Image (cartoon, rainbow, N blue to C red):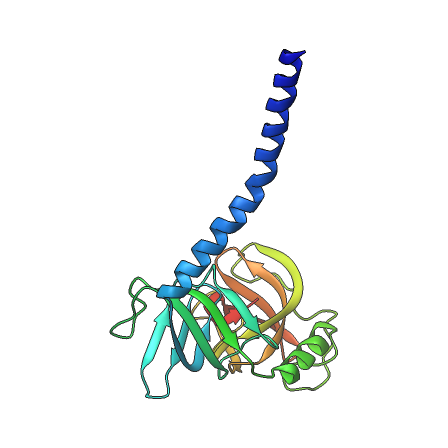
Length: 216
C-alpha cells in the first residue's frame, strides 16, 4: 500500500512540474523582455529606405542612420510603412558614424496613415489601375519571359517601391530603361527572377526592377 502511494505521489509531482514549465518559460521571457527594455534606446526621424532587413532614416537634425539588423523587429504600424513616414526605432546596442554598429532593432513604430497608398495597391492588385491611377489591362502585360532567359518564379501580388528606381525592359542591369518609379508607388508584381530582379506591370507593359528597391 505504501509503495503504491509513493508511486502516485511521484506521478503527481511529475505532473505538477510539467504544468509549471510553461509558466516558468513565460516568466523567463518576461524577464528577458524587461532586461532589453532597460538597455534599449530609441531614435526618431523620416524613413528613407526599408527592405525588411535593412532600414535607413534621417533624423530631425539631419543625421542619416542605417540599421542593417531589422529582420526580427516587431512592427507597430497603423497602415504599413513607406519612405517619407515619420518613424521611431527602438534598438539595443550602439549607433555611431551614421551606421548601425552592433545595434539590433527591436521595434519599428509609426502612426502614419498610408491608407491612400493601400487603396491604390488594392486596385492595382485587381488589375484595374496602374500606379498613376489610369486603366490597365494585365491580361498579357507582366507575363513575358525575360529576353535574357532568366528563370522566373510566377507570383501575383502588390509591391511597394522603397525609393526612386529605373524600370528596365529586361532582368539585367544595362537593359533599356522604360521609365522611373518613385518611393511609395505601388506596382503589380507578377514574377521573381532567380537573379534578384522583380517582374512587374509598368504602364501596361512588362518591366523589371531590382530587389533592393521593392518591398514585397
